[in-house]
Image 1 (cartoon, rainbow, N blue to C red):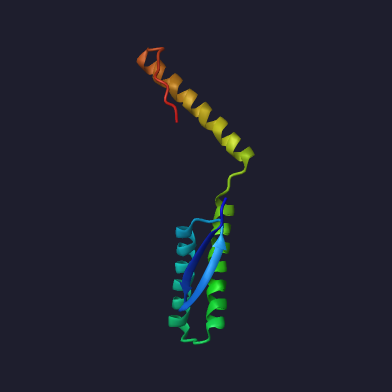
Image 2 (image 1 turned 180 degrees about the vertical axis):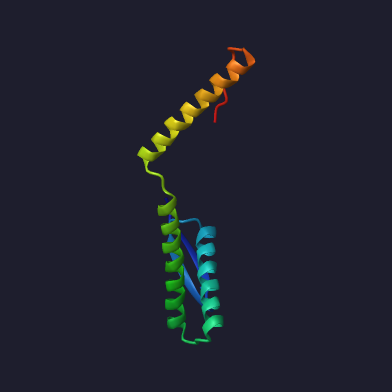
Length: 113
């Protein structure tokens, strides 16, 4: 893939960025960082750009770690997924049998998910 070369403005400074990502994506990332840096400056009153950048990086890293934690907590290992699938298939089978015995009808509509 060809490298994109794009100039972005982050916190009042122009940066030329070279990368394989789409230019719109790079602009989106730069805007996100710029907003984070502005939020840090507004919240703290700090004027030193380097300190603002470090605090913004810490905030973004915190967001990343929180998302990773949530993903890890919501992850269902394959073994547990298979056990759950077997239980659900058994329940569906029992429901199908019960419904067909109640209606006296041996033909049931299969519902696929």
